[in-house]
Length: 130
Image 1 (cartoon, rainbow, N blue to C red):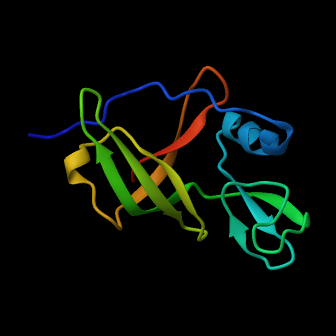
Image 2: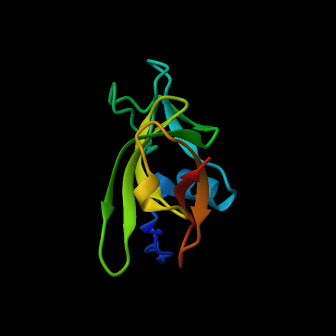
């Protein structure tokens, strides 16, 4: 028997001046990454300081919103859900949820695409099978 992901309401994100660009992107249906201009490397969670150089020579770029499941775990119970690491096609790995699927069918390497889930604040990026 299939275990379907429960359609739970995510908590509203804690917004701040440092993550405003990210959540403004989410409101516009765009997944935003940080880019270290010193190294050219992309990173998630985007912030104003590069995790590679600790420099503020950072810009924000739009991701395609597609990737593959890198690792995952299902929390089973009354309201089962999946917590996963998704490797974005651009390279960074982000912690997220896989939604709207049979949780028993998930596999590492499956293709996924972003879907923004509404909250009482900004929408948050989650992923569905592509």
